[in-house]
Image (tube, rainbow, N blue to C red; front, side):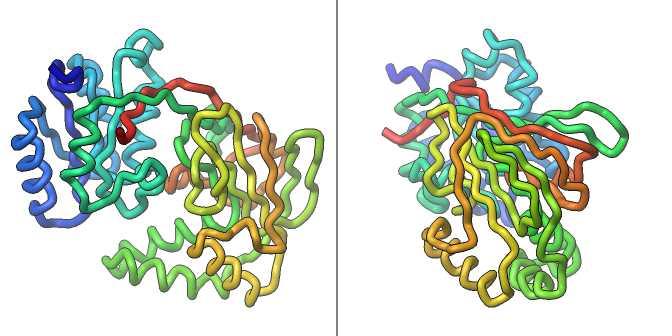
Length: 309
């Protein structure tokens, strides 16, 4: 019997809209494959960590997130709070169903192709993947850390995420909010004074945006792989607005590193010594602006992830 079918799956469904068609389709495919599973649904982004923790503590060895990068981020942070022997027995899978599905897309899981995704998950092929970690002090003076599968964004891209979240609450539409966010960006702060230490270099200047990726980083760290123990860094210096839109086009077309203002690095650690006004986003979720210096590192092969055959 297939290893994946020896255990009951714990499935966390994170709805993207109000309809239940996607949920019904997924359950139908699981039933057709005779997967034994329990299905729970998140009421909000804040409930994801609580429900994942519940699945872990109830002994589920295969936990599948039906959601996007932010929900996966919540899941890995829950797993990293557990003892290693508990974490090592659990395999995490994904059925992409989010606004951003970059980590799923890296492994060729496609939203809408539920049958193929479930067939791959049933085969239970496990790859142990890396996690990045950002360690910082918040505005209350508390020491914090957050793990990530994809990337940390510092500066303009984190600002766009914040604008998109604010406009989405007003406009409702994901696509419309993104377009409005890009438009508002024209009138927004375009550079941030930073001092960053990467490898043996210190960059002390105005930077428009910086991405530190353990994974694909929404196209900004396209050469990053989540199993080599390294972080890819893309730093974009201040540029004219017309070049910003040229850069966005290269980002969309997968040629971001070709932009003349992009400066790439590969490292095991990044220290942000000073960036007092730059917002920070972790896998698409904002953590605000840290107080004082903070550092980003990578932990190699710490999460069991289900990958395609």
